[in-house]
Structures are given as structure tokens and as C-alpha cells.
Image 1 (spheres, rainbow, N blue to C red):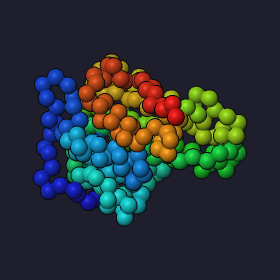
Image 2: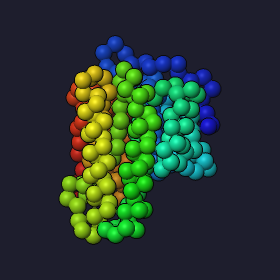
Image 3: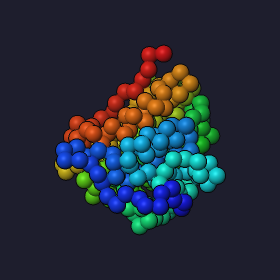
Image 4: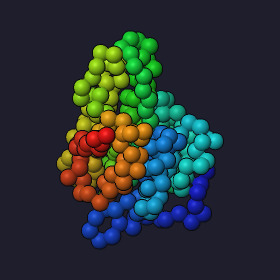
Length: 230
């Protein structure tokens, strides 16, 4: 791990009425991508204690964050080790923004074998590893980016569409477990694409940061469109 602050905030600074992002420990996976960097920067600006996670230490070094960890989340044991280290070295997580992904066309075994570990395996491993921390938080948040391809899958892109739908279903299952306590929220932001004419990375980042301004009961289990018209 590398740290980006010598005197980290010791706890949430959420104000009297809403669980704002300031002071929250937020883990961002896939942090070295364009979306990950934008989300990390926005959360840092909001006062969150950002933990950036990626697979390349060199690329992680330039990501805005209080702490950075290298972890391969296709490995369940690595995800568990990551969660333990975050809790002990930074603090229990209040948020998990899961941005590990990938895309390829195809409906054959090669496409499925390539995409399943990234689109679904990493999500399962990360949410299972951090679930107890997020559940214990007074304002736990789980975020993924979904795709319109999950709603209207095509045969040529069947593997991607089906796996994105499965990821959204997994998040819905997490949300069902949090419904009674009314403190944590699991959310899917749905886009057609990110950047390059799609949903701007900044729009996703703003939406993620704003989740702590919204009561869990209003966002838990929701699929929220962030689809642009152009």
C-alpha cells in the first residue's frame, strides 16, 4: 500500500442530517481507468478517504487517493486480503465503487471465459469481501456501472449482455439484504457507454459522490439511468 496523506481524517464528517461523503472510507476498484480516476478525484474533492485499487502499481501511483492497493479481484482470496488490509490500515469501508470491467463481442466459450471473471467474478469477490464492513457502516454504499446492453442483449454480444445483467442481479440481491436496516444502499448506474460521446466520466463521478447525500431508503436497489442523448 502507498498512502497519499500523512494525517488522514479520523472519521466521518457528515453533518447533522445527511450522511455526506466527507470522511467516508470509499474503496474504488478499477481505479486506474478513466472512470476510476474521475470517481476518485471527485470523492477526494468531497472529502472522502479514497482507497484506490488496481492491478498495476505504476498506474495506481498517479490516482488521487489516500491509499492505494494492488489486488487481482478475480482471485477471491486476494479480495479477502484486500478487505482485511483496508479495514486495518485505513478503516472499515463505507463504500465500494466497483469499476472493474471490460468488453468484447461474442457468444462463444472464448468470450464468456474472458469476460466472466472480470464482469461477474470480481464483483462477487469484492462484495463478499467487503459486505460485512458495508453492512456495519451507518452509510454503506455499493455502486456498479450497468449497461443498456443488459436490458436489450444482442446475439453478437450475448456474453457481455448476459454477464452485465447477472452483475445487476447480484447487486439487487445485495440490496435486498440491506432493505430492513435502511442504512446501506446498493445501486446500479446504467449507461450506454462511458466517455467518447457517451456518459461523461464526470457525470458518473458526480452521481457516485451524491449517493451519500441521499437516504439509503431512496436509492437502495435502484437502477439509475445516466444515459446521454448524443
